[in-house]
Length: 150
Image (cartoon, rainbow, N blue to C red; front, side):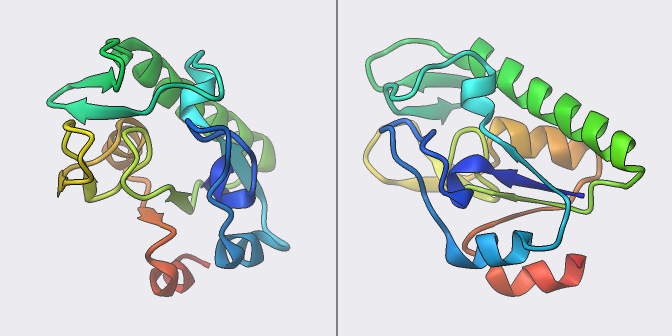
């Protein structure tokens, strides 16, 4: 089973109300068991919402709200749903393909919290949780890596 950021599959759940529709991800999903998640919505945040970035262990929205709790809840609920779905399908979670640079889903690089487009080393909340569980994570920017997990 594969865990996919819902926005990459064309679901309008991004902070701005849009999506990050990704053709290769949608092609990858064909004929595979996939679970679409938006950790931010699963954590109780509305769409659209103020953009957020990580600053250390906190997630702060551009309008100054501390939304760390919602991001943590969303990450935990996403993982729980993925584990439940994998169990129902009698499969392991093979791979997560998540949205690059996101404070929830970013893998390896995330925005630095200044809302200036600067990237730093780090993982989003869901990615960090998945990695703790030993679940491989790539982003939509790593298409060539996906074949290793089929």
